[in-house]
Length: 79
Image (tube, rainbow, N blue to C red):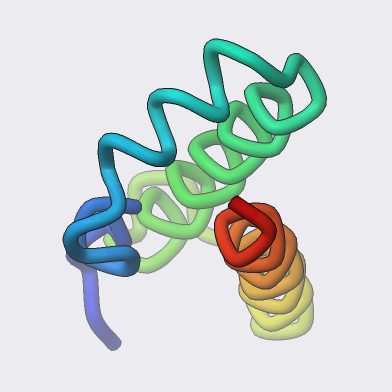
């Protein structure tokens, strides 16, 4: 399993300025970023066995991260 965190800069190349601008303007977008970072950190700790979880929990966390990423992408597409 990969144990490299998924950074938003990697997932949305060339869009960091737009991400920072939306974060500053829209509190709900800023909250999405916080939620993404939190779940991403939890997944990383699970994958590296720092804080192991069962497979079902890990899959659910990945689904949650993907959902957040989709919401971030949708907000960026509206800009």
